Image (cartoon, one colour):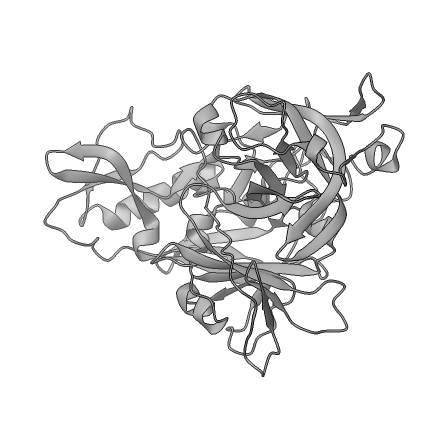
Length: 447
């Protein structure tokens, strides 16, 4: 769906990679339940959206948590407006501005109607929200003929959304948060209308001032995606629970100087090396450092399914993984086949092989932390691709160069069974290996 990765280019375009072409996303589903008290040790409160409240004087907002199930896009069902209108929004940690298809949008069954909301308020172009807070948007806001703040989001696949900035009340569970700024998009051009019509809009979760987490004032948020049953947990607020494995933290990379290829509000970390099994690839650390234009940053993105590496690094990883698997798997010998436009290492797996043979692990080594990818996370079965009875499985790392992407992107497929904490207050990301299906049970959720 809207697996959108933003960074500033010389021409300031916003790139969008749809699942059927480049990037796939995760699906998140919020379940409505009756409020109930949880463990007395944590004194938590589960709100209607399976929201958890943990009393803490140090938190500006009460932490909230909710279960989700993932498939193609990461979505959340909430309500907006007065009276509330149910909407479904794609969650994207690579985007800032949240937006909704509004009632004038064509070809979309699920829309938000601002004329039915008494709390809806368009943002005038003279407002500081329009003149100052939109400075991190890839295309600056403008003023329309009605002197309202006008926003345009355009994407590399020629699709676009256009409309006005506005504010309204957003409901998480039974609690309403008034004055949240979003884009009310009344003009949409989509290259994949059927897919886009499944949701009402997008919820931006990056570090920009207009993102959902920034406007809500959460000091941190976390998620944990199961690798077995497509369930998971999203927690808004603190996650200092004794049963969670100790987190290894890697600092967020921050560059104050505006650079054409560097997204300053993305969740950027420093990748320092890659290992295949225990073999460290002979790649200089300098290759992982953004250059003078900002190209080469490493972004952690929940809206991207797989992981993409710049050409030289991808080639080194591909060659070593191929070398270590050549005797246990049958390689697809077709130079014209490239899965999702960027993944060109694939294998035929016979039907009598119920599970993949033991595969060499791939470890992404960050400054202060490590993410180990192993087993079934390394190969992805390509739907509809068969040879006789053999099925096709592709390596879940791709070549950024083939996408025209000047960055390393860490997708959610490789974050399965990893507790991912985005600590905005301390500008860092924490990682820990966790059985995410069990994590949901510890929170008292049926995910």
